[in-house]
Length: 180
Image (cartoon, rainbow, N blue to C red):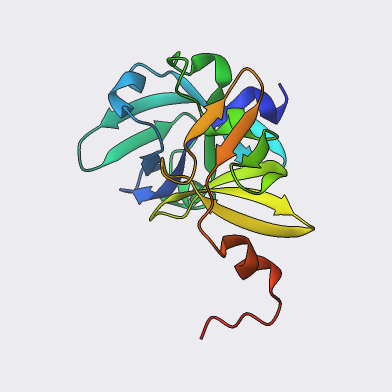
């Protein structure tokens, strides 16, 4: 399968215990929906390597996963930080007005005042908020993904409508801008 046929499910944060278990961050709305998961794909370089799940514990404060073939803390350390993926077909269906971030990559960004700006290169979570990464006039621009700034996503026409704050693009285009 090509990488576009997967979605990022989470990542392995750190080893747990001495027998190869991991703390796992699950980047999904409802981790409990994945309790019966039997396998994941671990990104190793450009490859998606399948691993069967020997055990998965989902808790409100910590998720643990044991992957078959990983049976020591040393072998677990080699995979710490690795991203976990699942086939896109496993994603729950959404309402028409909802979307997954991977779906809007390559959508056209059109501002209500400025008109067409560019296309979505990536959607990234900074931890504090999610942002659209767009190339505008050869420069990477980050657009906060909020209802006020992105009031509409048209899945049929693959268009994201924005209402950018005054000066947002100037911050990225002005080379003499100094963050001090």
